[in-house]
Length: 332
Image (cartoon, rainbow, N blue to C red; front, side, top):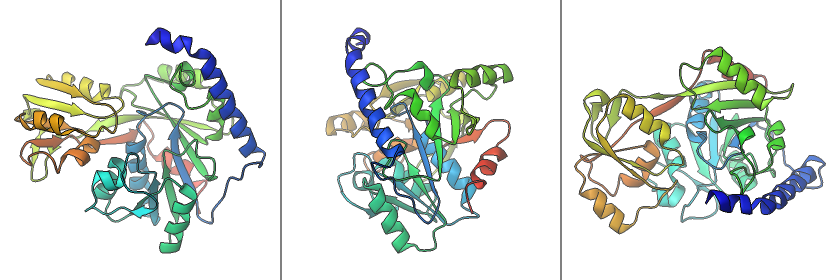
């Protein structure tokens, strides 16, 4: 597979150039990038998947929800419905997608919607909720039809975009130069003990522009695992099957191994839709631990007493107040 990617290098150059021309047309207003009366905050990445967009959206919600009436808008990846749909807690992942359903489950007080047409989605949200103060756009860095007021670009500690190349040779959706559109770059999934020297090395690698800020974040794992009806201390939770359908389960696996947990790991692709045969196999497991995103897809298909998820949060390292400070520079 590695050598096949090298063979595809000419296609990567062509694809990257097409994306660059597209971006140029938006930059010079040949293609229209629409602005809105309320601030639009965009969260996205250059890499394909696995950078921690969902936990970052939830961090933004926790940071802003007490002072602003906000909504989130996602495309609703792999949903079976189409068009604009406002997410409610009774929806299924098939109807709205796993991440939007997770947002609504964790923050039922905010407005969550899905629409692949972001312009239409924003317009419908503003028409339905005219008192909205801001909208969070999930996974929209390459969606140039909307002009955000503030953009967060995520890149993971173990897979910086400066060490990658565009598809199909690498995993970038566009050339690295596209990073200049962001006001804030956040290096996600850092070790909590990240040193000042390591931060300086990453800073030199990413080379943020004068208008850009750089922050570092880490994953906080809960001390409890949660099922539909109960919570158990992670310290006493053992002999289970870990089931993941996310882009990069490595940090979770490392965390569980650091706690000396005894488990088997069954790994599926990101946003995996479980087949009947896979579900029958999982139903034979006595105890399953999964991520909350996977739990959204599995909770109606496996036993309540069998299925648990481990909640996580993203936290900015060292100076968490800086995130709110940078955001408020662009918010009324």
